[in-house]
Image 1 (cartoon, helix red, strand yellow):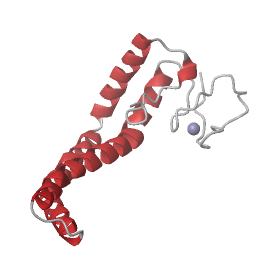
Image 2 (cartoon, helix red, strand yellow):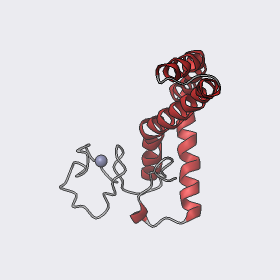
Image 3 (cartoon, protein in one colour):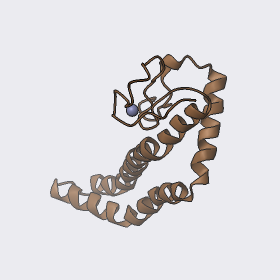
Image 4 (tube, protein in one colour):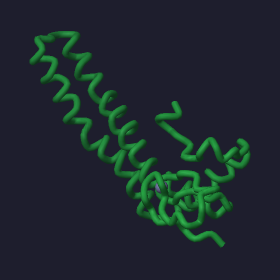
Length: 145
Ligand SMILES: [Zn+2]
């Protein structure tokens, strides 16, 4: 399941389970300070609820087009909202995690003294200081104290 709910912490950092948990806790704190995040995450269930009536209709229509009738038609109508939920929450959830939560993790890692790229989480430790950009994504490196 880690592809669905990745940790965003580079395995090479060698953090213990406790440290990872502490970083995630701080990252969520950082995340919740930005009210925009909460609104964005709320749009997922709202979009889902708004699309439910269309999902059943679409499922029913598609079943008819495929020649399904009777029970099969009923099943198609019933299954559509479930598929819609999976689509909304899995796709919407992972996109939001990637673009809204992951940067909080990277920033928290930096605050904990780990030299990681704030955009993609690439581990920058050991790179010569002349290298001013992340080799992975090209984001300017934050100067370390
Ligand atoms: Zn990067």
